[in-house]
Length: 99
Image 1 (cartoon, rainbow, N blue to C red):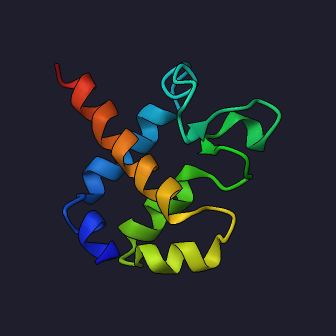
Image 2: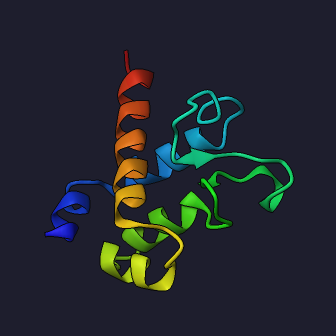
């Protein structure tokens, strides 16, 4: 069931969103964003709020054919709800970029 969420996400989509998330102001502007940037953590790379887990780790897992369950097992500080929210934010961010 979890993997159906990510099955429709193309590798191109994930790479593009990861790139957009790294641009200044793209994810920090949303106070409720699950993905944030802090220059003092991992050089400002987009991370899951309250962790040191880069969002790129999630996209890398999916890009390399690994499952969402595997990601959650390997990064227990990220919850299922946070991973899903991050993917939804990515989808919305890309949709806004195409308007």
